Image 1 (cartoon, rainbow, N blue to C red):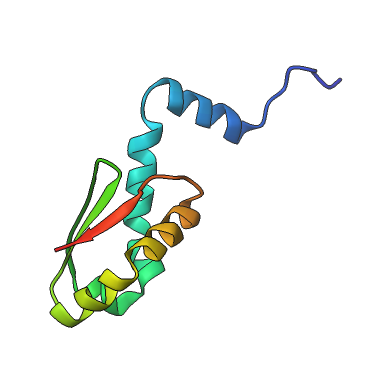
Image 2 (tube, rainbow, N blue to C red):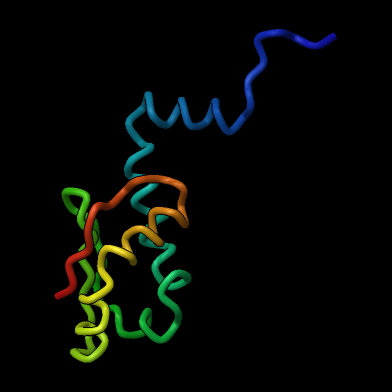
Length: 96
């Protein structure tokens, strides 16, 4: 017999995370972990420090040439990262 009050497990987990205040930190973690995959190994090797503050991804790039190229694409990169994890986590990226 099928119960009428069933829910998908992913929906239940998401509700649990939202209620307990861990959805945003988890999504931030997933986004940071997605950086090498989205940006590629070469850029990831030149990434020294990465964190999120106030919906801005802060990324330290060790190569001035790579940093200059990434500055031109910062909004598109933010969109790609958000799409990768299916959540709107960051609005912008700051390279330093």
